[in-house]
Amino acid sequence: MQTSELEQNKHGVLPEPTHDELARQQFVRSFKEHLVAQVHPGNRLAYEHRVKPDFVEEHNREPETRFEVRDVMTKDPHYRMFSSLLRTSQEMMWSASQKPVQRELDKLIEKTKGTGGAGGTLRLDPDLEIPRYHQAVDIHCQPGGYHTEITEDDVAPGAIYDRAVFIYAMGQMGPDNADMGSSAVAWIRENHPGLKPARILDMGCAVGHSTVPYAEAWPGAEVHGIDVAAPMLRYAHARAESLGATVHYSQQNAEKTNFEDASFDLIVSHILLHETSEKAIHNIIAECHRLLKPGGLMVHAETPPYKNLEPFDAFMLDWDTRNNNEPFWARSHEIDYVELSRKEGFDGDKVFEVMAPSAYQIAQARRSKVFQGGDFGGGGLWFLYGAEK
Ligand SMILES: C[S@@+](CC[C@H](N)C(=O)[O-])C[C@H]1O[C@@H](n2cnc3c(N)ncnc32)[C@H](O)[C@@H]1O
Image 1: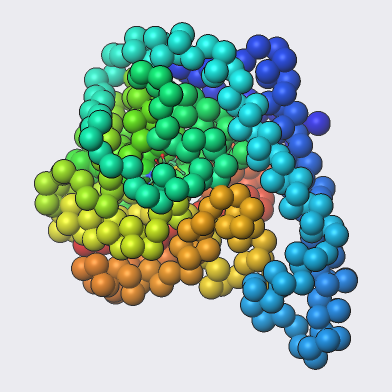
Image 2: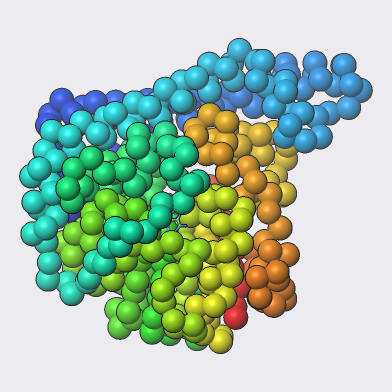
């Protein structure tokens, strides 16, 4: 039984599942909800009542790091069951999202070519080298990753990703999977009310879930989205056009783009950094510094860093590193972003790290009248790291 009846909004290129395909996708979503709501809480119980007391008895102190928690929790039967089922749900999510795309790929490719009208553009670069950090591993278990093309004008990775994100988030990022972009937009508006961006760049835009909210928030702005993966961009372009959002997509590496110096007022990314190497993160921040106009703003949305978390919570958040093909996840959550930004040209005093509330969950709470000015009912928070130039 799903805890939320919310379904994904349709748009011009969202694959249409058959009855059975949809039932399978809904099962995976319910399975994930069950794991998160019913099985996951047992991990803390196992830790508090079984694993930690055993550790204290042996060491005369509590575990102090996520590594110490990991050593003991990974032997606990409840955690092992949870972890195994969560990994299984991830593999099921990809295969359930793939089925309708494989079945109607030719039609889908035709549809993506047919969309238009919003005035956005698409520029691909067949010679762009896909970074090794994406070629070497299928990030978060998506078969073939973001960039693999098996046919001409392929859009399959984009179409699969669009549906899989909705199932993965269990609808909690809203009907357009737009919550990261919407939440960052809301935070920027509240904290930088004077910013009226004429040019905006979204790095690692994937299918544009987070890019479109910027085009909607600042309709007069020229909005660009870049990504290394052509199939994501083809789909992103068709999706934005069908939604009436004007976005200019181009296939570029965020580490080194072909935009001019000081050409953007606002540069953003959403869950890009943790999927790249530490060296790449340095290059990306240096590139943001080069591309920002003086007084411009960069904002990168991620899940929370480990430094403020209890060892148990950091261990749980680190699950993806070892179990979900996210080899850079751990390091990206430990980097000192103030120091890194300084090294790449930013004034350390202008760097910020904040937790921003989920715009979608605030809106939901308001609709259900739970919102009471400040308390949005235990909803999610996004970690925003950034700087003014
Ligand atoms: C998790 S997805 C991003 C999701 C998207 N920003 C959103 O909010 O929906 C990561 C994306 O970053 C892209 N990517 C990874 N490294 C990149 C790089 N160096 N330059 C540009 N794009 C990159 C991947 O191809 C993938 O589409």
